[in-house]
Length: 448
Image 1 (cartoon, rainbow, N blue to C red):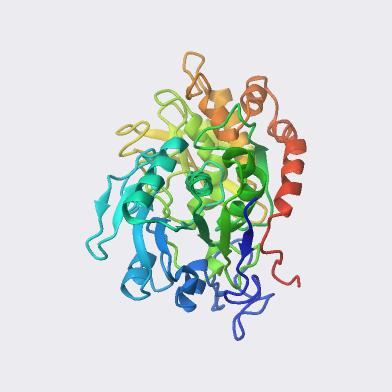
Image 2: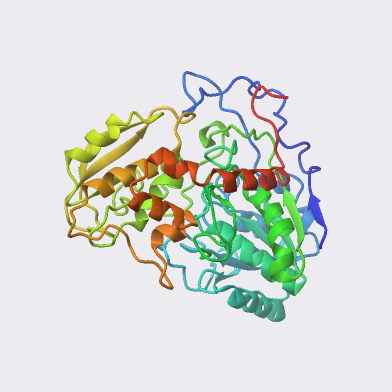
């Protein structure tokens, strides 16, 4: 296996707060953004740590960067601009994931290749280069054309297995291992905290797809740097024949129980339908409504200003809100709501449904909540309407998103939300043990 280097020297020990910053017990109240005059805690991201060292890690390297609009320094300068125009890094190529390097494309789309006017760097569509054999070909072609020594990954993740950027990272690591390239991950916060892993673990290879490639839990509770270390140790040896020469540039000042607003970093939309941190908080659960039938199921609110918070369909009425609030789920309330999507499911049609209001982030369980919502929606679905959306290769979309057939089977068999959640606990316990071995940051606020 290739060696793994953890660059604690970039900015000191991960998780140690800055001198003069907020105390370990201070900062915003749990469950919400900074307020009341409290000073937000300041976290330095991996790219900021690298820039503070004048990019010495990349000296003499021909670099390809996998990024998107989130790859910014705290002053909102994009890292490619800073590396090329100020830092003197030899950036020979950039690569865009789903939604593209500039973030202009909707779900399931990339962007065509282009030359960046400001820097002269050619940007390639890495999303279109999947399946994985093609991304190896893409990196090999760039390596032959302009030379390539190191691939840098820097994209803001949102903490859910089906958010595809982590799988672009995974297959790029596989390609780098096969092509003998170094792989550098610039770490960023998990915006919904990294306290714990939650939800079902993907059944590999039966439910493997680009919304979940390998056996991690639905809400993984890790940073991209930690995931890279897990991928490299647990999955790459079987996939690529060996691990990759991996280096993680860690953050400084990040604690596992931090919500993104507490980091002091700017929120840049990771994708067009991830406008706010509030969206990211509910997304590991309510994204399951993507499994709703495209013309008859319940939609996840794309085409509205509150995707994944507004959930509904033309055939849904007040009964759903009443049933959901009667469950008294922790940390959440539901408001009867009506909306008219501008695109995606039910575009141009008035939909009834709910808006999901998280009242206590620390008590809120997005996956348990979404399972309860699915169960109650299924009860109200007319008998002559299909609830579930078909997926690929004969598989249901709900199975691809949850990574297992259990959730579909249990809901169809009439099990309660508690019973559905209980069905994945053994697998989750096993993943939590593996996950613990690859964590970089171990501290929570007030625990030293």
